[in-house]
Length: 307
Length: 251
Image (cartoon, rainbow over the protein chains, first blue to last red):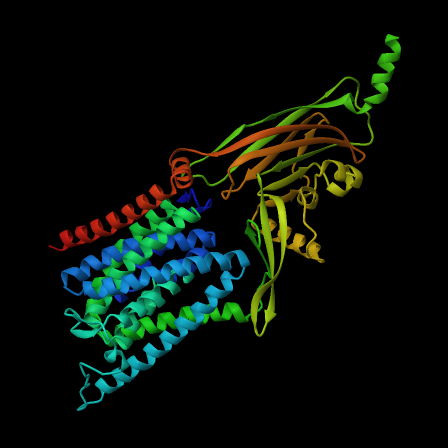
């Protein structure tokens, strides 16, 4: 069954869109990532104009994150105080990012910049996570040597001023590092058209030392607001949010997210991290190939004017 | 005096001896949620004052042209190992859709001078509207525009797609694709003999979104902030209700 999208101005198969939303929702629920880094390239692939894909993808991530965060709330796995601190940084970073994005669009270099950011960040984070998870898995497999995880690793992060107790995370650290993490993620999120969970989650675990238990819920909580902000900015500045497309993706996505959350509870944390890192690396590899291989069509058409 | 006038009229307007009387199967195309494209039939007859000459043969050309918009065409080049957009050409206006349907090969039934005058072929229709000469090799960019849009089904040359019966009745079926742009579509019809245009006619098809499609599209442009807030409210409500529903199902 075909569906004509009023803003994207293309006709797409309804079930294809539902399936796409479902797949991304599944991952969102399992890993606590918004799924933007998958939905946006997938929408390009089925022929949605890039500007509409980025804006509508953000809107879809809002819904799947709300659905995911509800499930996490019941497990008391959301650190609200940490989420708010991350958010303050996130909104500031996002505002700067949206501005840089608009400037690069006019220059015709936004695709390149987005692709390079994807390759760099996905590759780096995926590689780090995979290496770390494999090491831990290897250690736990060996009999006799139970994994020893220190609750606190004291680094330069703990020497900064403005310390605050984050009870849910069991941390007593300065607000500056989380705020910086939020700002960097917000900036990248706006430029890459994603929620930023795939950067946020590892940053929370490895940089802030938050327990894995609360990471997913807190990340989702923060993503809701950053993507809501992005959606609104796109709706107002470029009118590229397609409500109908978002609705179909959301219906698929919320169902997927619920299943994903259940599935995530069954898998061990290490297995979950290996799966997520492999997925992240696969996306990075695909985008790197696109940049390196000679494209079939050297020319591209974009509506509007160049600077 | 009257005889002189008639002679003058006959002398000045010999081309008007054959005229187009044309119609469209529909003068409006509505884009609704289940829109997957539309087929319009352009038909007509040739009205004559005198018996038709045997040679050269009568031919018919029909063009359908969608609303035009400005474009940037960019070209990638390899820079330090990766492919980067380096050159660009600005096109002031290019039609979003363009189809030329004819009774025979265009090169045979339309002379170059007539093509220049009436801007009929696809490359003509784009150049006509204007390309700024900022790049030296702009022909490559134009060729790329034609190639990409042809692949997308936006630009089409359908030689032999117009049927002409007894040199009097003609008919062309034009398929409008699903990725239509809203606006007025201009339909032009030409009668040619020996490469010369002997009569021409213009008609317009209005392509418009209807129902929900129209409502959403209008709202997003007239009230962007409200539109954005509605989109967000919808997302939050959907996420929350799905979560509540699943919880209900489990217990």
